[in-house]
Length: 326
Image 1: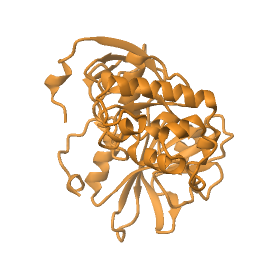
Image 2: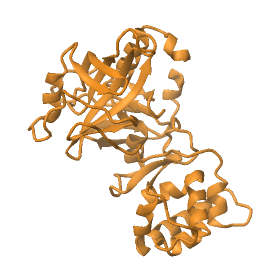
Image 3: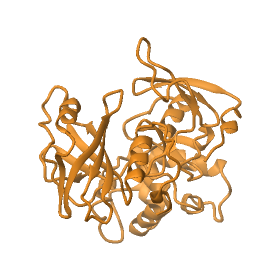
């Protein structure tokens, strides 16, 4: 974790607006969320922070918002398009200094990952051959998760090729100077955004993320409600069955809504006979559907309560828990 002293070690500062919130951002990756005019000050307002790591993916976050996207917006501008995500150049998800971040396209993010890039190289012969003609693999057919790349337009492929060659020229030299060698020479796995694929649930209008086995969400409302998350929140009464999965039922232990009204946080109870009797999940409303995202399961109640607080971006004063070491 970063020390408090690190927050003050910076050279420049920028400002930005991200998802309706105003931020001051420093070039060491620290952010300062501004209080909303004429509204109650929240616990994390008006303080400098590096955020807290998300249990689901390790990215630093504040109130469910990922810091790397806030920092990139402040220092590199708004997201260029819906196809762009943020890449951590050194592959360290907690290094949110602006010089370690860059906007990349979905295609570039695939090619900058050594594992997926290797699969592309096998299918097409080389990265360069793929970029020259994405529609014509030479070794078999792409799997379902790679099929979308056959529809990459020549213009998009050329755009990515030119940008990646520029990065290759500005970075450390590779053995043979090819684009593929530079990609594979990056070392550790990079920031793997976009987020994990969505999985269909057994409930109409509900999908799952970081939650591979389809479940049923009996309290999930109709997606046509004018205030879908507020309606869902009202239904999540303590003790009610919120999830039905092949392993049993999850009942509502605690529930909270972010102050922006964009995220629901659920502490679920699985019963005393479960190996891990508690879980944390996060619910959002994206593209007309309810997204249920697992934030982990826990052996002990205090471990779940700690995660419940940190997931909301709230302070935790209870110290270490058993689950911190499991």
